[in-house]
Structures are given as structure tokens and as C-alpha cells.
Length: 545
Image (cartoon, rainbow, N blue to C red; front, side, top):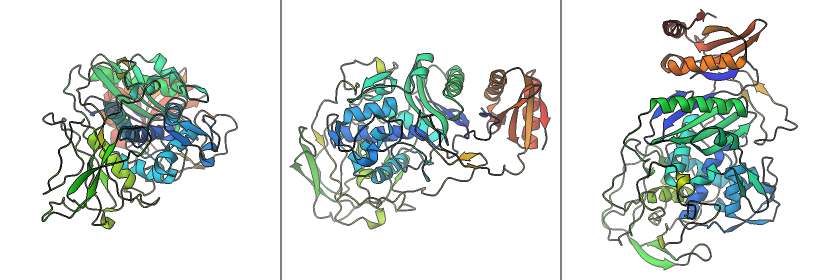
């Protein structure tokens, strides 16, 4: 599909990505790896780390977080938290997931990592571990900030990881409303959830720089799709495009495929491996089961070490994407304690390694500076291993731990990772800290809170030159309404994604009507696209520079 933007100077760049959630395979892609403003889609990672912290015992749903003046001062959308106020984590999660409250997201980040900047480093490190290679976070809420970017492809990966890694919490994304402690909050995604059959999430986003964004998931029969749209021009237009993409996707994917669960992230940087001894230690939070902490002893005679990573700054990288999860064992660890005797782990879920990587992200220092006395760590068992049923997660029992709003995960003994001493904020070395690559799209450098359309700030528009040699286009003619022209362009793009996949859609408002055309093509691409459209009995004209 091509870009779905009217010919407006202030329109945000468009991107889209659709994947089969069962396999992770792409179905449709349009500018999917272009680094853009994610807006409040950022909060999916904030919530992912919150769920991980709960599962490994760092916090509980009823843990109370103290609100800082910074969190209280965040712009809308917001819950209305006050500085010094204490509120349970469960309410912050509901406000961030359902209302997209910026103050709640900042409070979560500060409560888990000590500061929002330290939390943003954990977010970026976790993104690398999940395979999100074109994402960098600077805050927990998604308001526009220099160096804060992601892609439609990466946010689709993020949505899939929420679905597979934390099924017990996933149903919060289908809630139309919830009690957030100090207020009843309504979903920013209610309209799409109500209008699209099978939709059960996930997250909306809006800033002036980003446009109207959405990562959505829907299930029909045995099929489940996850899709992301960046740069919508309105809530209604964004939802319409998402519906069309999902409809086309459901028609393309087979009813039965071999499910390929996402692999747990793997730690690739070289780590010091020590023989471990296990001894009990007090729990990190009140009223929770005792944990077992690993302390380091003398090093074994010989240690098998992984090959030196190409860059010690890149502590995390994506796991292989195509291999199904082995079923021969119920134990998974993120680090290997080579050539040493150690206690056997209790049976645990495949997501142990997910928790290990997240926990390592919270305490990781650059690999080249890791002290020799650094303790080895084992992952904490968090999720019960089972194959995913075909039905949607929201059809699970309401009384189970899947309900964040009503219950918390049942406590169970766990082996928690003994992390090194907390690193100071900013000590986590991250990859891809460079600014986004220049694009030929219009970029707006001012933002406001999601859903806050009153008193918009002034915007600065930066115009960047188009790519050389791609000044050709294809006109599909004049139409009586913008909606009619848009529908025709979308249908043409879906029918011939190979030729028009990198084109931009443009609708020009002329005195004679709305002219629909694809732009940003080379001469050869324009001629090929027009010939294929003509073969489908669609009138078209190649337009030169």
C-alpha cells in the first residue's frame, strides 16, 4: 500500500506493516522500517517492562508508587496525578494502557528504574533484545523528543511480544473503560474495538509530529493479525485504513499454519561466568514469596565464553525469528554457567529468558567494563508453559490472572536474578543512538498530548528535498470525493504492492474534482505500475517531472 495522505503541507509521514501473528511473517509493508515518531505506541514498551517487573517479583500490582513533580506535570492525556501522591501500580497500568495517560506512564518508569532517563535506557535495551532494530526511546510516554523514534515494523513486533509473552495481562488492551483509582478512564481505542469484528487491542497514539497512530490486533477463526499504521490524518481515517489492511490480510493468510512462537531474547555480549551458590535472601518487596539469590564464588578452572561481540555497546540483539520453540524441556536460562556444578532449576515457562533479558537490561553495564566479580544470574520462572489456543486471550476465565484490573498473578516461589550493583543513570550503553536517518517526508517538530486537540502549539515545518530520480507518478483520474479517490488508491496499492509498495499516495483537490495519483516513483516503476493497472481495466496516466 502507498502513503495515505492528502496533499497537505503539515501531514505526518505514513507507514504501515501487517504481520501474521502466528508466525511473525509480514503480509504487507509500506515504509515499515522508516524511523518515525511513535507517539503513545511507546507505552506498549512501558507496559511490557511493568508486566516483566511484576512477574519477576520486583513489584506487585498493589505496590504503591509515589508520584514525582515531573510525572504530575506531564501534559495531557493524563490521569490527573498530584506530586507526592501514592497510588497502586495496578491503577497506573490501567491509566497508561486504556486512557494513554502520560503522567501514569512517567510514574511507572520512575517507580521501576528510579528515573525516566534510566527507564528509557532499559526500554531501548529491551527493544534490541526483542528484535526491534530501528527503535530508540527517550521517555516512557511517547511525546515527541529528539532521538525518540520507532518504526511500523518494530511496533508490530512489540504488539506481538505483548500477546505472546504476557497473555495473562493482554486482555487489558480490549477494555473499553476501567477504574484507575482516582478516576474512571475510557479507552482511546474504543471506536476501533467496537467497529472492527475480532479486534482486541492494542494501542493508539497521537502527536502533531506523528499523526494518528495505531497498533491493532484482531482474530477471526484460527487467524490472528497484528498491524501498525503511522501517520493517519484523523482517528476515523486511521481506523478505516487499519480495517482495510486487516481485511486484505485475513483474505491472504491461510487458515492453518504452524505456529512459530517468538524466541526469547538472547544475551550476546560477553559475560563473566562464575560458579554459583544458592542461598535464601529477603524478598525485594513486602508480602511476597521468598526468593533465591545467586552469589558468586571462585571461578572454575576453565570457562567457556561466547565469542566477543562486534560492539560491546550492543548488549542485546534479536533472537532467531523462524525456529519454533523447543518442547523437550521446561527450563530456559539466558546465561550459561559453564563448567560448574549448580542446582537444577524448577520447571518453568519458556518466557524465563524474556525475564532474564529484561532484568539484565535493568542492571546492564557496558560489556567491556564488566568486573570479574560480577555475579551470574538465572532467570525467574514467570509464565506457565502451554500452547496457545486458537481463541482470543479475552475469552480466558475472567477470574484468572489474565485480568489485570481484578486480580494479580498467583504468588509462586521463584529463582530471582542477582543483578550487579545498580548502575547510575546513563551508564547503560545502547546501540543505534544516532538520530533518525533523513527522510524526504515532512517532519513537524512540535507535539502535544494524545487526544489534547485544544490550543495547539505552533509548529515548525521542515521541508526536505525529494529523492533524486523518483519524481515520476501515476494518475488514476478525477473523482467526486476524497473518500472515493482514497478507496481507489488503496485498492490499487493492495493489488500491486510489489510495484506501488514504496510509492506515496497523493490526492489533489482541484476545481474539477479530486485527482488520485501515486508519486515518488522512478520512470520505470511508473510505467510498470500503469501497465499493470491497465491490465486490470483501470485507467491511468504516467506523469513525468
